[in-house]
Amino acid sequence: EVQLVESGGVVVQPGGSLRLSCAASGFTFDDYTMHWVRQAPGKGLEWVSLISWDGGSTYYADSVKGRFTISRDNSKNSLYLQMNSLRTEDTALYYCAKGSPYGGNTDWGQGTLVTVSS
Amino acid sequence: QSALTQPASVSGSPGQSITISCTGTSSDVGGYNYVSWYQQHPGKAPKLMIYDVSNRPSGVSNRFSGSKSGNTASLTISGLQAEDEADYYCSSYTSSSTAVFGGGTKLTVL
Image (cartoon, rainbow over all chains, first blue to last red; front, side, top):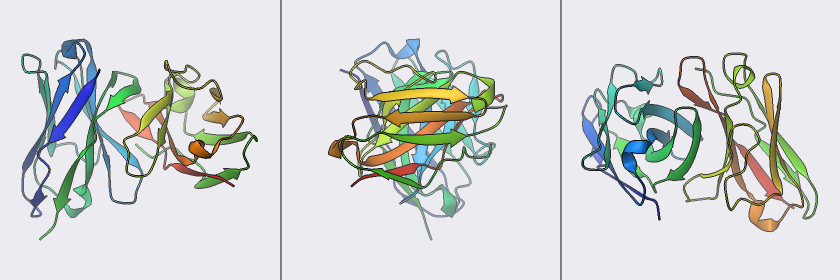
């Protein structure tokens, strides 16, 4: 059974930094592209970033480009999102998802909540 | 990276069919056969219902179907059931090798 477990969400002040983690199990992690998707409270889904199976290709939404960095450690079956220069509008539930370079994310975690507030 | 356009809400009675539209541009929906649809119940993670425009993952009911014409993709749910009441999101691959979601559609089963 595929399991994706996000962690690292906390309350942080504007301008602060945070690192989210996603622990994967139940599938061959390094066979898959992985995504981060977020959802602000009461709002819709927003795609954040993706990383190729080997970490060689990364892409970002314009809203986070230059502030967030996606990475992975295939030896640990783990996905990460380093978030810097956080803004109040980054407040959201952050999901990691298993997918392909083209979307079609078949499995999602339960999310970790990031709150950016002073 | 503008969000894809979906109707805010749709409704239907049990047993009826409904269609949710998802309009983008030639740089996303219209340019690639990589449109996905997700169902999200309150407080739950999204669930993939359709990928690559019209393909259903294993375990998804054949009452769910997808199609595309030009820059607009559509999700059709036939034989509406109470448990179909949820939020639905479309998503597309883009020419920048990124992804973009629609704003979401709330489906109410009357």
